[in-house]
Each structure stands twice: as C-alpha cells, then as structure tokens.
Length: 262
Ligand SMILES: Nc1ncnc2c1ncn2[C@@H]1O[C@H](COP(=O)(O)OP(=O)(O)OP(=O)(O)O)[C@@H](O)[C@H]1O
Image (cartoon, rainbow, N blue to C red; front, side, top):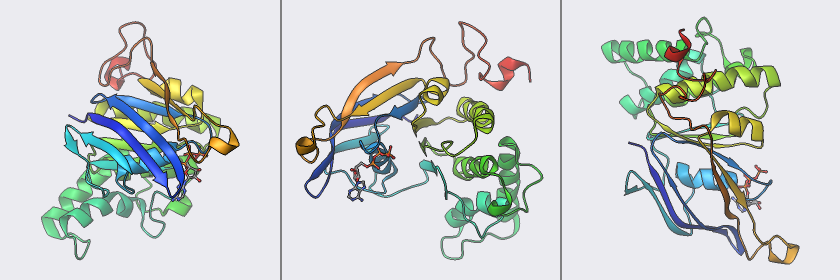
C-alpha cells in the first residue's frame, strides 16, 4: 500500500503563508501531477512530502501513519537536475543507496551482499535503458540519460512514494516523449504512488491519473503574504488509467509493456 492523506496542511516561512489548508487523499498507486503558477508552492509541497521540511500545521499520513519529518527510503525523489552524484559511475550511483542502507558507516558492502546489490543495480540500469553505460560518469551522459539514471537510483530503493520535481523539464521534446513512455512503464511495474510537479500540461495529461492544480485564490500584491495557495482543481483523467492494467477503452500506447506484446 502507498496511500497518502494530507490533512489541513499549512506551510509558512516567517510572515509568508505559502500553503493554506491543503487537504487531499491520494490513493495507493495513483500518479498525481501537480500544476500551478510559478511560485505558488508546488516544490514546497513536494519537500513536505519528502520530509526535507516540516509543515507549520496539519498532517501527512502514509498508509495511515504520520510521515517522519526526515527523508527516508520509503520516499524517492528526482529533481530537474543534480539528483545524481557526479563523482560516482552509473553503477556506483545506483548501488549507493543500498550500500548506505547496508553499511551506514562505510557506505560499502563486501562479498555476497555486494554481489547481490550489484546484480540488482545492473537489472535496474537495464530497466531504464542504460545497459552498456555502467562505467560512465554522469557528465558523460546526455540529459535524458542522466534522468534515466536518477530514476534508477530512486527506484532501486523500492520507494512507496516517488516524488518528481519537474524531472523532464530540461529535456528536448523528442527525448521527453521517450522518457514519458519509460516513466509510465516504471509506474505500471513498480508498486508505488507518484507525485510529480510539472509546468507542462501535456505531460501532466499524458502521465497522470489525476491532475491537481495549486493556486492562490487571492493574489493581489497586498494579499500575497497573508494568504497561501491551495488546491483549486482536481481532475481525474478520463478514460481512467490504472497502474498495472491496460486501458479498457482503447489501446494505450504507454500501457503496461505486456499489453503491447513486447
Ligand atoms: N526556504 C524558503 N524560505 C523562504 N521562502 C521560501 C523558501 N522556499 C520557498 N519559499 C517561497 O515559497 C514560495 C513557493 O515556492 P515554491 O518553490 O514552492 O513554488 P513553486 O510553485 O514550486 O514554483 P516554480 O513553479 O517556479 O518552481 C515562493 O514565494 C518562495 O519564495
């Protein structure tokens, strides 16, 4: 399970109210796209889900349990840039989280444990289409490949929730389309809930099961500090998309791989 309950969430920075009374129930395995004007608090909301920052008021529950106010392996994250470690190879990047988990002090594994993690990492690298690049460093990869690597690095930890902050925003349109197909395949296959911030409505409607809009209902300059953004639209995609299931309405080109006969 990986259901999120966000109840009466507020976030303030000093005198500035950024998020105001946000409540939303996100069902397990949903893919939620967050859209809204620049500066309305979408990334702040994601940081609260990640546990990187604490809310001022309200609660966030994952499967009914309050989220710890620190990042943990149950939440993965991919940013637009700089999600991967530049000084580690592709293989090193994908193994790192597991190494840290297995050996907190040295961040290195040995013997059979290392072998198992390496096998798992190689499979994950293949799953995101990066086979053959295991020994390369991020600077030797294209932007699209770096984002594939960032996805592999997050997914090897088997997060219940994957948080994406404009992960494909810097990619060229052709590469973006390719990575959308990959993203949807990964979402179909991994038992996770996805929350993605995007500025691209087309991307939102291509990938998501729900498109949620954040907005400041009152946005006159003198009101900006005193009132925050909240959810103003919540659109369920039709025909419905369900993780792990092909669309019953029409062939979905981005549906589960098995349904495409591949
Ligand atoms: N650490 C911080 N300290 C003070 N104010 C902050 C902090 N982080 C964000 N803010 C403010 O919170 C507001 C929301 O910022 P946020 O980055 O969450 O918006 P956003 O919707 O993600 O914007 P964009 O779409 O441009 O990325 C902004 O006014 C920003 O200046």
